[in-house]
Image (cartoon, rainbow, N blue to C red; front, side):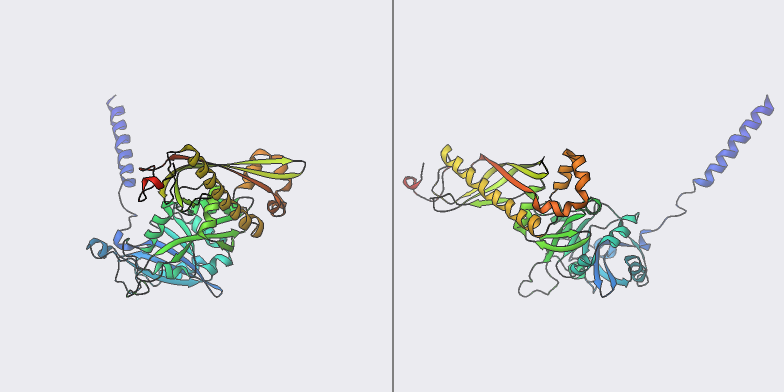
Length: 399
């Protein structure tokens, strides 16, 4: 019995000792001092080569509590910008790494920006590399620069720590288009292979400032087909696209009521868009049902919003203005650009899978011919703090 207990103890001690070898702690650790933390990525086309620009955090400046002026090639702000070139994105990274004393770390990337030429040449090879990198975050925002991506990353924003941070915050606000790395991968893998990415431009420089002391801002949308940018639309048409995609979050609508001087501005509280596909005897149709609840922000007329008849007239004008925005977006995206970034293919696929599978290879021929009917209903929830217009005599108010 004693021999059995001794053997049992020996076996236990043996396994404890062996396990200790695998619990030796940070044998493969990488110190933060050995890493170059990337916060923004810019991809540009330079002739036949790819130019990769990275925005790197400068830890000693952040820790010292110095001015958070953003990126600077000279190294004066909270971030610095460095570039490398190569035949592919992987080659460009290898070239860039040769110029840095620290190893690049991609786990903190907030924004990925494609230059306009790189977007027109095709982003699929770059997206493939980015999606394979285990450090890359799928929640990183993806944008297209009007010009070069490098020029955007070099900016010195006066409020945020970097231009990448500015782009992330603007994307999160969802005033216009918002797309993450995951969203782009999904859009490019759909049957339509059409994608919409926010377009970023540089705010004009104020008098007395340097060309870098400004910020990027989102203005419009870049339209892609088969991973190549085919054109862009402005902010007004972008909001029409957001209505169609059921992604509208913030929007103000200013209208004039027929026969009344002045304008009224309403803002969206809640909006919903439903796509209702119809397939009848070989004919493809789409009904777009839009509903919205609005608040009144400004009343520059002599209308009293106590009157229900006035409210109904205003609701009709708001619905007419919303419909006009949506139809203008349809004219540009469906008829002229022939890019199904609106989700029509998905709607038909869900409701008519057999018919869709039969024609999906010819969707580029069918999409522009779809008859679209837009139905809009606007409800004014609250007229604001004052139901009567301010600044005019009471006898002039139309009650």
